[in-house]
Structure formats: structure tokens, C-alpha cells
Image (cartoon, rainbow, N blue to C red; front, side, top):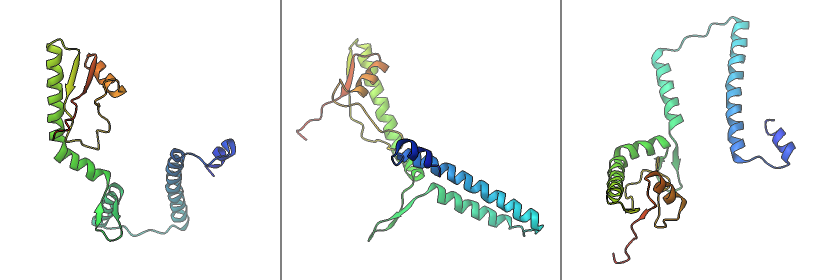
Length: 169
């Protein structure tokens, strides 16, 4: 029913972002209706529901939290793996973050040295330790690329680019 105005006005199936919004509204309204029904039934019948032990509530809350933050996947013939964002972020924080920070600090030193020498261009090394949870795009070897131009403006340089890769490795 939430799709009706969109389909009526455009004549097309809604975009995927609309599906996400409608799903969020549906889940909110579902829980609201369940709570209204719960209150109606138990206030009308005057039944007293037995109270759950506190350890059971904590256990259920912990299980619900784990189910919300994790995503277990299994491909045919392979092991079950935990593939949720929480695990990627934790891995990046404890494994990739230090190397990434060192590489970014090395880039900053190279850029600062270029500025001290009154150079208007800087060439920086390629990042090796890239945490995928926070880093999705980087400068390239092309100084005219929009990311390179934005980085150059940020550092008050004319251009910034990656050091060209050598084919003699």
C-alpha cells in the first residue's frame, strides 16, 4: 500500500532506495501494531503474564544483538562465515588502521616537504594497507582526476598524484 502513490504517479516500479524506506516504515508500524494489540488483549482480559527471569531477558537481548550486527553466509560446499560490517570494521580497526595511519602520515610528510621547497606539485606513494570500511576512493596517477584536484586544493598545491608504477618489478 505504501508503493501505491509511487506506482500511480510514475507508472514504474519504485527505485531500490524507496524499497528500503518502505521496509523501514513497515517494520516500525509492525512493532507499533504488535504493541497496541498486546496492550488491548492484556488490558481487556486482565490476565497477568508471568515475568521472565532476568538472565533469560539478558540472554534474549544478547542473542538479538548478535543477530542484528552479524551476517552469517554459507556458499554450497564451503564453511559458514561471519560476514557482517561489525567484523569488517573491527578487523580494520585492529589490523589495517595502524598501517593506514602510518602511510597517510608518510604522505603528509611528503606533501609538507614539497610545500616547504615551494614546489607546486607532489607525488605520493600508493596506499598498501587500505581499510575498506572507511576508505573507498584515492588519488590516481592522473593529476587531472577530480579526486586529485580536490586533494591538491586541500593542500594548497597545483597538483598531486601517485608515483607511477614501475614495470620492472
